[in-house]
Image 1 (cartoon, rainbow, N blue to C red):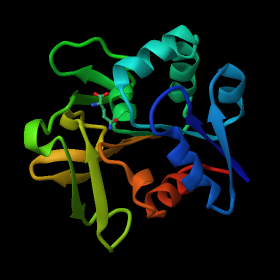
Image 2: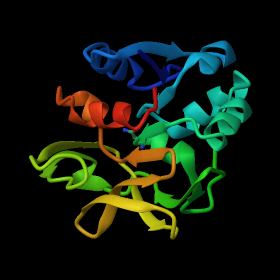
Image 3: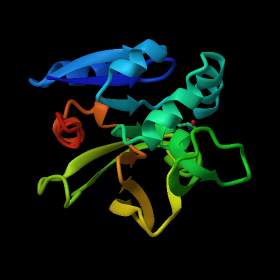
Image 4: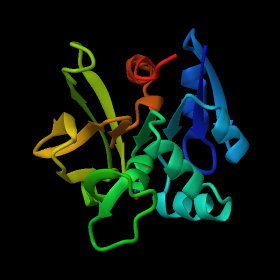
Length: 191
Ligand code: GLN
């Protein structure tokens, strides 16, 4: 059994927990404090609002313990706002949060008409069948360092990537009912 946490301070954590509950070898855990954090073998950082999540991480004294666990190799998957929390750089000079992944991200990158939309794409490293991609005021990755593996692009921009133990997507697999991305993340967790 693997204990897979979802940071449960703000955003779409319930949807991720419901997806994890459908996987056989997984015990889902809502992570709200450092005791919870100490129990997980892997952690999902959900979508929501990254500024609010960053503030809550600081208020609950979770930012530094989480950064340390990620640096020590905890498998993490940041979706949307979670991707922004992991980034070493946020365009526009905004202060970063965890600042551990070598990517520069643009928040709310698909402005105006494309604020929220659905698209489809094949993510070759993950499954040969196309995924439905749900974007909600989504970021894109503007630059990725040499150690970052690009998993998917939409148009010219990177929307899924991996660096060591860190996985990020700018879209929301937890809102599609499609288990493949969650299963893929759980496979990255040794156990
Ligand atoms: N726009 C949000 C932010 O900048 C992210 C949106 C999402 O997580 N769906 O934090």
